[in-house]
Length: 93
Length: 263
Image 1 (cartoon, helix red, strand yellow):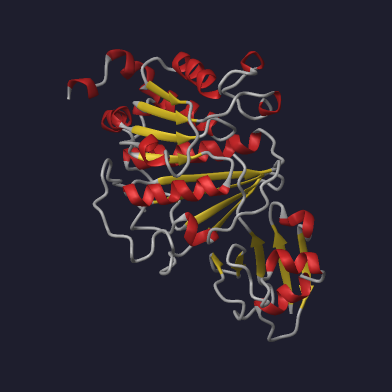
Image 2 (cartoon, each protein chain N blue to C red):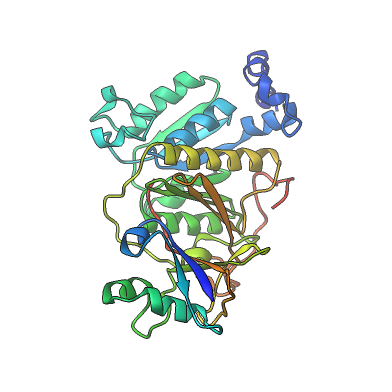
């Protein structure tokens, strides 16, 4: 299945702005993040030492005909065409 | 009270907004009675203060301990070339009082921290988060919850901005969303039009809340992408284990205004 991944604010420079990622049919959020966190530096920004998504990282799932929602589990399943947004706090004012 | 009645001057000044069904003279009186706390006189604080002042918010209290420097001037529109080396609060009060002499501007040259925050907010009806760092934003989140008054959050990075309105005991808060996360706090890139948009969104939310109109930006994070001119809304649920607004926080009756619109 094809998932669109979007990064925001300072994450854009570390990762990319937007990319389509190919995943297996039963892929979950954790599989997607494992694929985009393909360097130690990227992994450190998103995942903690046990491999879980850091609490301060907000992962949002946008699915056709549904509102965008914050995902609270990396075990949430994905569907073809989903958009996953990854962001953290911005502090500028 | 007599002082809350609208003068002939005010009726004329605010005529175009009094015409709005959502406002009317009653709404204008509510704006006049309001006391708003704006944390920060910078990129966000400038447009927020300007638009609340011209809308007739009765009392605007701004707090900032910084001095104007040249690199502020691409976005902090309350401050001009001639204000370099002045305290931001001094620069701000001068412009705001000239913009609208009918409103009361209070400025405090002080740092907002654990020791000062609650007293600085005092008896203001609501807090506008126009800060430039996460620790103080979380502090304001906690103060808003402690005082049971709304918090109007805004933040910017480059061409991107975020906004969310927090109504304690009713909606998700900043900690529910970001879980206390603090990104690396270094010099951040920003162009003036970004805090202009987000500051205006914050001011819009404040006005809506005070007069009881429209649907507030609650339980939703608004992400503004200036480059693509896209607005994205993300649902944000209350975290039942939230360190700031979780079940251990006692429910208090909302003081000040009760919003008649939709949360």
